[in-house]
Length: 173
Image 1 (cartoon, rainbow, N blue to C red):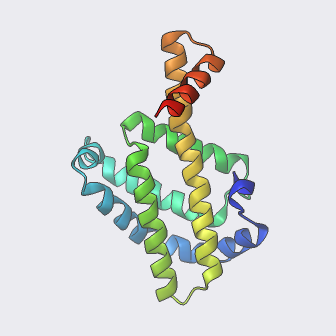
Image 2 (image 1 turned 90 degrees about the vertical axis):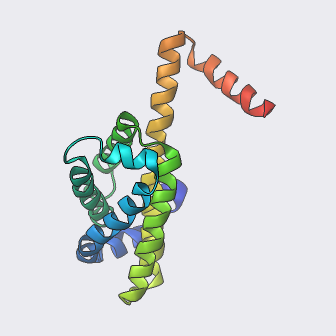
C-alpha cells in the first residue's frame, strides 16, 4: 500500500520529525472528524448509540492520528494490522465507506489548513495526505474483505465465481 501511494522515506522522516505537532493537533482533528460525521443523522445515531462511545472513539482517533506521524513500527506490519482492525471496527458498528471517505477528506483538508497556519511546509502536508490515503486504503479493504467473506460463506460460492459475478455485474452497469 505504501508503494502504491508513493509514501517515501522522506515522507516518513517529515512525519516523524513533526510527531509532537501531530499529537498536539489530534484532538482538534477529532473535533472536525466527529463534527462532520455527527451532521449525518444515521452516523449521529451510531456515534451516540451507547454511553461513552463517542468519547472512546475520540480517544481512538487521537491515538490513530498520532500513529500516522510515528509509524509505530516504521509503518510496517503492526501499523497495517492496526489499520485493518480499525476497518473491522467500522464494519462492526456500521460506519460505512460512504461516511469514512468524506470524513477522511475533512481531516486531510483541516490538517492542511492547520499546517499552513502553523508555518509547516508543503512537504508535511503532502506526507500527511499520503499516509491518510494509505490508512484509508487499509480501512476500506476491511469492508471489501468482510463483505466478500460473508457472501462466500452464505452462498457457498467459490472466490473465483464471486469475482466473475462482480466483474460481470460491473460490466453490465
